[in-house]
Amino acid sequence: MTILDKFQPLQGAYDAVRAAGQDPFTVCFDAVLSPSEATLKGRRVILLGTNNYLGLTFDGECIESAVEALRQGGTGTTGSRIANGTYDDHAVLERRLAEFYGCRSAMLFSTGYQANLGILSTIAGRGDHILIDADSHASIYDGCRLGQAEVIRFRHNDPDDLARRLNRLKGAPGNRLIVVEGIYSMLGDTAPLAEIAAVKREWGAHLLVDEAHSLGVLGRNGRGLVEQAGVEADVDFIVGTFSKSLGAVGGFCVSDLPDFDVLRIACRPYMFTASLPPSVIASVTRALARIQEEPGLRARLTGNAERFYRGLRAEGFVLGPQAGPIVSIRMPSTEVAIAFWNALLEAGVYLNLALPPATPDNAPLLRSSVSAAHSEAQIGAALAAITAIGRELGVVAAPASRAEPLRPQGDGPRRASMAAAPIPVAPAAVAETTL
Image 1 (cartoon, rainbow, N blue to C red):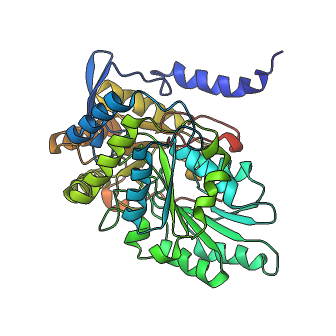
Image 2: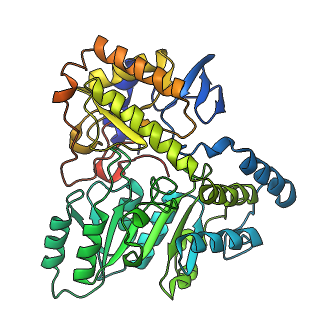
Image 3: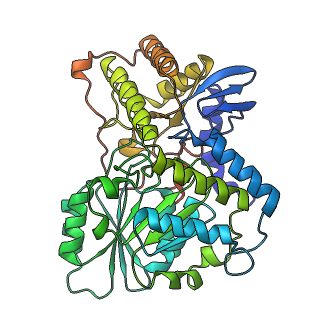
């Protein structure tokens, strides 16, 4: 017996998935050729399972900025932000993020996961209450667990349930912090943010919005759902990541609260982690400028997402509730989902496999991420491959007029990883799309 014996059920489930074909957790590309194409075992595949929403990982200006910073600043800072790890470029990026959001302050983190972990575990303490959407990302759950506040889940995208739970706290001491996401990464649905902001105002709570999947995607200026919903004045904290629309790695939090900067000496995940290397800071700074300079990137992303979503709906696939960069297809069973995913890989299309119990409504899903970099031909080829395999496996059985959107249900953390943990796991360890 060893300390790892408790993971034997998980190992068994993992082995069963691997026995059915390719291992979805250890896909290793020979080379990534562009934001939309790679080679895998010597064959070209369309990348339809990354979060490269604006295709900026291969942007020439971002690459050149990173290369120049690498030459001038070296490969890393070898220190935390409160020691030797703050360079002028870190401060510049924080100022530009704050200006982008119209806020006083911004803090950088080494990952988006760490941003949620650090902010949530720090701003809400003993005697406070955090109310989180039940479908929240694993980093939100873990940030809550690391802190000492009482954590209360409310039903996914249900402002009325949020209000009921706040009402039950009437008279109790402590602050209330509401946490939601701009775009939820399993089904691609957006939060009813205007209604949630109204509840926040009514009950005198604070509001944090995780815009990981909506930065650069939503809003006239790409500031996310907060901008699109017109509630920027109601949001106290915005958390985001650099690993999706900005095409790099890292995370941030912006806020207009006057005392926000005290978190630099209170937030342990910020204080005790090495800061981002100069090359990453440089590429992200340039990518942020590209979001502001080129609204056409968002327009191309929206066009590709709507074409892909409507094409699948027309064939009778059951999808998430709205068109967007994340398009998930409901599968009739886990076995069919695994077979479908393997067949798509053989057909030259890579997307993500998500299995229960770590999915909304315990539904097996094939999760796609559309990019502005996808060509019309690539979208068409992916639609053709998915449709052909769907017909072969009997997934497309109902006419398009009878296909109903997949509606998230439940009140627990049942979110799946894009390629990390879509097999049975303990609820506290549920992983999701990486930040």
